[in-house]
Length: 169
Image 1 (cartoon, rainbow, N blue to C red):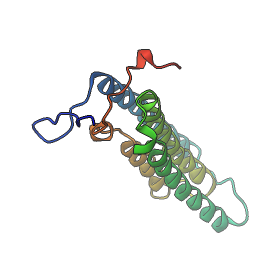
Image 2: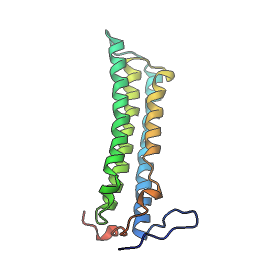
Image 3: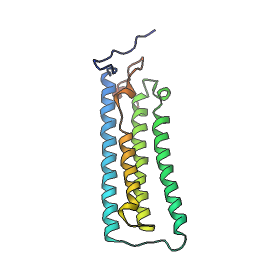
Image 4: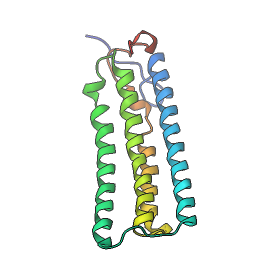
């Protein structure tokens, strides 16, 4: 039986060097995705300000419901992506832990970024006002923040992570 990892002063597990590198790499990529989300929000705002037009003629309420349903779908898919791809059971093998941890967080942030694109579509088709699209933009940013990895997600494994240099790609 192997002993559990050592704990730091605050009770959190101390990570091995490979886990720390993986955590920093994942945080960096998720932050890059969040910067792209922010640029999408900024571009959407400029487009909606400069081109205030409504592209849909007809059943606007049906489109509104469809876009809100799509937003709920994006939120659910982002959450499930992070929870399923980054589950403890999937992260247990040390040789695939780094790549699976990385993918679960970066993909979840990227999926969450689709909410910003939905906001642009909503603004161009339904209502080109801030109070109409802000829920889409805020959702994209919140999903990006939720995808930011935490140390505790890589702690308490009995085997240390295989260093990324040794992991085949």
